[in-house]
Length: 113
Length: 115
Image (cartoon, rainbow over all chains, first blue to last red; front, side, top):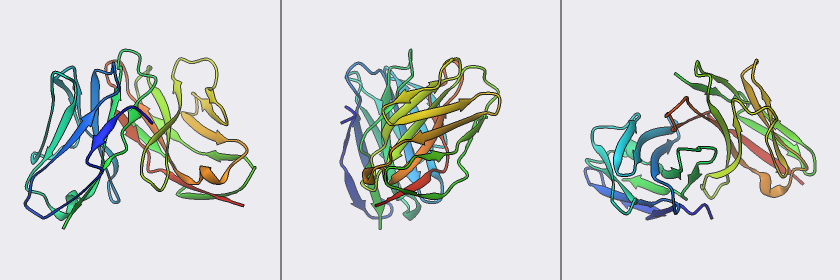
């Protein structure tokens, strides 16, 4: 158990819909990262939050947004979903100041039909 | 920009034998970190081992060791005494320079351990 909790584990939704993925980082970790794993793009970094503020942005679509709350949990919002958004979405957390480890949650498998 | 290359899409290894998974990287940052992760068929990403660019010795964690050749920009993972449970996808990843903590991943290598 990595200590990073993601919910839900599976999500099936229709095109055009909006979903929210949730992540609770390991105790003491201030940084949360979101990654997308798809068959054609591989594992890609989406966005990072550190202690409530956005720190880095990757290949995140404008239809996607994220936030980190005061209790440090994070949510990734995906809207106007398309078939191509079907993927495994991972959350990871780390202590950043000494980043020799980065632990991933179990992922949320999103299927858009 | 950072780039991670894993040239072996798939490998077969006999149980109890060692296997080496190749990883090369490209970066202009003097300070970086290299990670290996295991992804079994269940999908989770399991952290295996870390090597910092300034570490003098190769990292080891149990049956996993990292063969770090800085001049060649390679960070190969060696799994010794393979077990059936080692069958999985393995990803090499790199963290960038100072204040850049996101990971860039290679395409992965699928390892199948045969009994």
